[in-house]
Length: 222
Image (cartoon, rainbow, N blue to C red):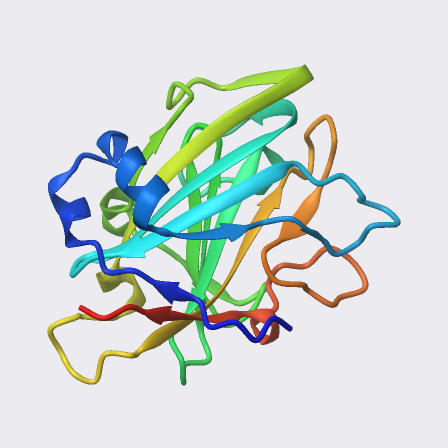
């Protein structure tokens, strides 16, 4: 596993900007992570070009995904649905010392599926208020479902995940110096099915619910 220390920069200016106006700040100052590891290359070799830019503020985590690949699909417009079947980007987070973790999955129109989890099979979905607190902006029209199986397409999704969902308050000690994470790009039912990650996942078949393969993302100096 990579020994480099990944540091999420503290960018409080993001709180003053609309998500749609953050591109330049995230492009030039955020931590950039490639999501390009094909963990099951024999069955799923395809790797769309995907990156994520990550930063944080006093309020939470900002993440901007960008992806280019074959086809583009959005089947779900309501939160809590199976967005991993669509053109989907994901960030899974865990607070060090906790057994539970949190999955945040977004299709290309910003629909979110998220939960507090003990495992793939044991989870508690977010409340409607928690879903509403996750801000999202995308390159596609939010709420419009479609399937474009032909050609090569690009899309981006910018999201804000409040610390409150993770049970954290930056003004309350002890606040962790890092989160454990992995990031993913998938599309179970897209024209070119794929399951790729930032850090490798060792499993017999596609399975991103593996906290043992989360990796530290350190909070930069405030």
